[in-house]
Length: 260
Length: 164
Image (cartoon, each protein chain N blue to C red):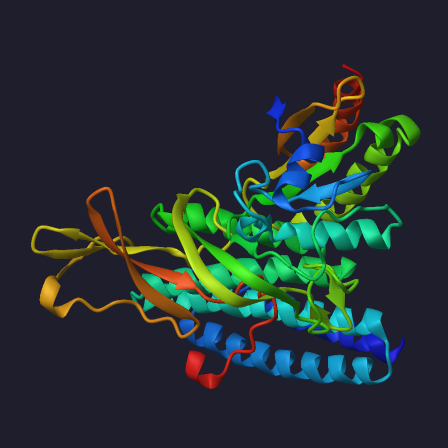
């Protein structure tokens, strides 16, 4: 068996073990241990990807990118269950969306991860069954310049294409010279983290996720380090929303100990 | 799947009016090509850049109505629907190279099949094609909204619209 196949077998076994803990009923301690194991897998996959890049082996580099994304997906799902157990559904929602996006990225990274389409369908079912319906927003921007994330050239002048893997990296557009244009309520947003968090009711603000009313003077909003907050008013409704700032950013998320 | 056809401004004269170069074959039109009052007002969809790369790398000739020294801004709508740019097909192109639209739609569909794989929920694409009629050079816009597989059905509609 080649060295590459040894790594593949080992990673697949870890992912399968960790995935078997991905449900509400499993023990939280075991789920935290699985998260630690996945962080180690992520680090190892990143090392192997760098080695593949160094020797110009694009297929292996994309394969290890796929493992990074797959591990990120399982890690984020485990985190979602842990956060739900801690009664933190807003953060759990963010973790679920991270898991969905990472599963999509894995399927794009390498043909060997096409089976993650089933994982994505499962995560979508969890979204519908575990969480209440959300109101999504789509932010429209006027962009002066679009830069390719792979080569930094003006996107459209190079040969790279958004969503395709290149030497262990997925191509995305880096938007430059941004101007806000509009915000629209949509059924199918590009980023499901872009949603209405609270809305005003008599006596305070109602959290759309927990349905609790926080008195106006002591409302605390969910913080997301990768997001910016904004207020929007529409049809007499004042609400707080989170807009994700990364556009087309589909790189694997390397969690740190802090994110536990 | 939804396909609608409507009248569109005559592209040739509109291009001259607004300071764009006159298109001869297949080209991408700015989104507000009909309504912009000046070249500076023109905007193109973010996905136009992807289509340019796809066509160039697949050897499909794409004429540019824009002045390369005067790039126009992009509109970036962060919805899950893949909103394609407006493609213009001249009457001369349909006469001389009738298969080119079929090939172009195939290239686009192949890319989108890969791009949309693994995305959960309802994934739709939209695309507009402005067709110049052979008889009087007036134009019609065909707007498509639906799944990727349905894109191929546009080729026959383009041909029949051009022949009207």
